[in-house]
Image (cartoon, rainbow over all chains, first blue to last red):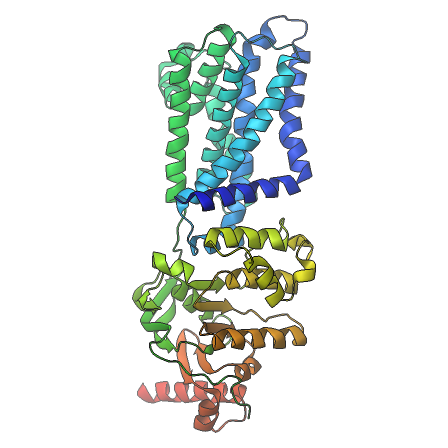
Length: 245
Length: 254
């Protein structure tokens, strides 16, 4: 891994995002709007928004970053730029690291905006510290980025890449404990939910929802999310081929 | 008859040696045991109709093509070796640059990946005559300009071998002449260029010619030699005669 190349790749990806004003508006605006909508929906049922608000705060960046990364990487594969880069002194770790860095920064900006507005304007009440909420949201976004990178290898078109979102993210969302507590799921599904990274993302946010302190259970959940992220990046690296048929 | 513009012949080892290269793509054999050499310091034209295997041969030289069998050596190393990634520039047929970035941003990025010196971006922009359009997004450029941004990327750093897949297609004649003179300038500085085209007339611009058809090399010589040997007026005629001769030989064998 060469830091110069990783950093250049991150800067280039950020420049592309910067040129695309509409995407920037969507990245920052859509999760904010959804959180506002949710706060409004539950405005007559005090406490309910606080129960799920933080968990959703972690899920939006994951979904958005999954989509952005899957489509961006697919474009690299199909436009010939990836082949060109891999014929240059570009390491696979530089390529993936550059994207993870760039989209990690975008995700941080997104989490800052959405969390700040949710905690102030929308009146979200979270027991844990704000920085920890943002940290978990960024980890979730990195997970989305890594999963998107990996999945882009299996999509031949942008249309397919977008379809992978419900296929990869939705089952995790359903089983994450957001709708039904995981220990109340049928036994088989409970086991399945323990091998899905989003379950740990939701657990981390649930911890912050109720507990004012940052304890071992939060760090444990966070470590699992980052472990899955690294695994997805390694799988993603395996799909980057210098030689193709 | 036109003399090759720069007659500098290779000194020392050839820039690329291909022996008995077979490539299968999508279950079809695209190259059937091709052998050739590219002399160093020359502009070598790779000519032939599209679908004949020119791009596959070029991809094999750059080391991005999975090959079925055979040996491809470039600058004395097996094609695709890590240390060749600084020394070989490859231009794909369709422009492979980022359409949402400007020409300068594209070149700045690829220059950083290659570790090219700071002034390189301005140098290559001038070489492909894009200085005035440097800050325009590639997606807003004409097809010819996009192709030149992609070409400029291959000129970054100090490549010793340039593998250019149809670099002059669709360009206006003045620009095309300018690019060919750039290619010969580069060859004069010791760079080897392998340039493909499906336009036979471009043969007059090349020091050496490789004619490829249906996955076979049908000629490897200079233009004058080729015309004398086939008693032809131009490359088109020589090409036809070679194809007919091959076919007759093949029928004779049967």
